[in-house]
Image (cartoon, rainbow, N blue to C red; front, side, top):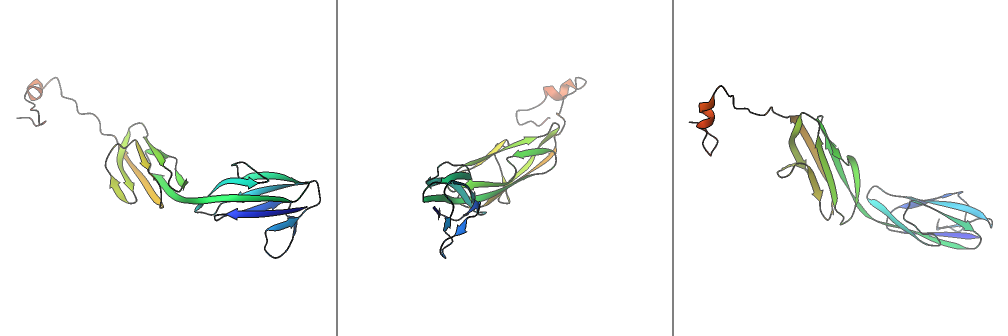
Amino acid sequence: AFLTVGITGSGSVTLDPSGDVIGTTGKCWGYPNGTSVTLSAVEESHDWFVTWSGDASGTTKTASVTMSRDRYVEAIFDDAFLIVASAGSGGDIAPSGIVKVRSDADQTFTISPDAGYGVLEVAVDGIPFSGDASTYTFHDVSADHTIAVSFDSAPAPTLISAACPRAAAKARPDNRTK
């Protein structure tokens, strides 16, 4: 029986067992009837495996077919982009490392300082971000990005001493004392 493998997008497929190559295109293999063949989708760095079609189905990167007749299986890949997420000492960003994101999808990162730390800076593509420092979402991703978070020891809260009630009484709305 013959197994023909098609690919939409960039990526490749490995077969186990490999079978006998038929022809010169590298897209057709011969197998004895009854052989179970496992196909594995291999993503390139900027591609995302989407689904199998034809005589295999599903969205996991592996699929199996039993060669009881000629079969056609297609692996479908879509564009993906990479976001490199990093955090300095004193906290975490999740997810972290190299995060693969499908084209036009959203990706949210959660920033969590450790106890006694606060967010010093969030830099997106090298540019400091101002806003809520607990999350950051890339919307409709269509390029590679970076997000880097640095943390600093959280300053101790400023307390007004009970021994100095006049300073507290003279505080003005602009937070300056007279």
